[in-house]
Image (cartoon, rainbow, N blue to C red; front, top):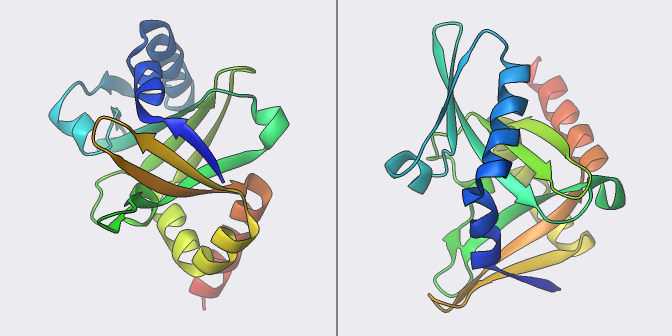
Length: 171
């Protein structure tokens, strides 16, 4: 099980150069939309950017990865935000107002989008399997003294699960 420092991850999300890159990725995906970076209260709820697109507000949560996508080909899904209090993680929290999650890999400047509702449903369906079979990861917030628990899920496995869920939902 790997660990990471919460504050290193946070500093990446505050970096102006990275924010410019994320802004440009969102502008490319939502060409006619207006991209807004959220600074405080919305960001605290896991909404880093909002995009006004086709008369709708799309809330985007951005996940920055320090290594390369080509090396890992996975996304990190958080099951527990705090292992001590058993607070649920962002990827299984149905109360979040997030619509889309954008992962960005710093080393090779790759990105990946997923609908938040698909993340929640896939995580629920595959929780036991993914936590048993995929590398588990704990991010330590040394200031608050707790750890979160996540799984590194291959993108192909995530997409396969989403297709299965969507297929059966049609019937």
